[in-house]
Image (cartoon, rainbow, N blue to C red; front, side, top):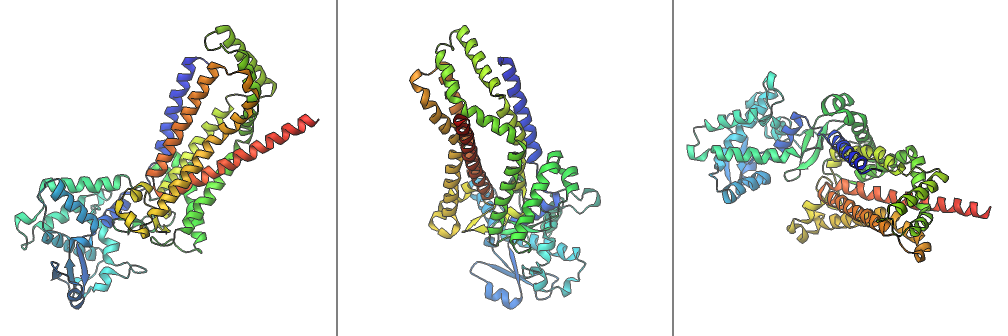
Length: 507
């Protein structure tokens, strides 16, 4: 193949890869989903009680008071009620050296949000109870959990999908309180910092592919967010072609299996993650099996090429100077091509298999990354929505075995080992076959080519392991299961090819 052709194919592959990655990893999150996620991250500093409950819950330095306009609804305010906000606030004050608003400002903002949430449900504030506001977090999730997202979601009919519209309105309304001084309100620099940090929190939000609407995920300190139901039409029209063609159907399979393994019940955000793990297992096996059947002819041809390695090695040994001698290089290429033709093998078959499989595997990855079901649940203390890296690099987790850090470490080691074996096993088998012709000497040109192939394999292996380390834990399970399937496929194919070879020799 000419150098120009190789470069052209390489550029075309990169372009195809970029298109596939873009089409398969688009976010399914709507503006309303993002508003719910934002509120789950920052749900305020106030916890609401009856007067008696507030006095019992009060701790030193807490601010306690009655909500204006509501009967027997009291608040207990402390930054630790919302750890995400507390972390952001501390960062702005101590690391960014910004003037930060007072706790009293956040109390006023929370009460503004509460009043608007009550109004959104057309309730009389004087009749609203604490139980209605907070709910029981199981069946009735409460007014704030149902309507608190309005803090970030635009309500103007023409701008109903505009994030941050209400946040500006509510913040200005809180500023108007006679209880606050100017110094207690946020500065422009702080507001800009706050919005930037919160936007960064949702820019990577992708776990919104839900075939049934409900509460999913683990945001802030374990708070679930309400995610809208997505149908096939949404995937085609709002997300993209490949998302409608492959990502949504795979996501539907994940949801169906997870709910099925959960006894037909909706997946709880903090429930046992076993149904999700089983869903990953079955979906991965189904997709890999379908792809194996679809590319069986090409995969078999690639295996035949591996079987011919001893013959190819003999040809290469005949022309030790092919890397510098044009005649030897041409003769070696002719004999190699004749060998392929004799056994009816197309050397570009393996490339064709990759072109077919690559979009599908990326779309499976996109579906698992976007699945709302997989963002919920824990397994042996490890939250499936957390990345392995975030768990293992949080040094405080190592002091708390219940944090799932050992589960994360075990998953990372298993995934890395399985991926290593899956990618290097074909090379190990080919190397074993070449031992028969090792005495003939090695072709320097082929030695250089083998070295490039080896380094490419190592680089790809490192990339896959890094991705498994940095992405959510559910995808680490996907990489592990997929690697086991690849190992089994390689061994079975190797056994079948050796058996056929043995039968031919006996004849």
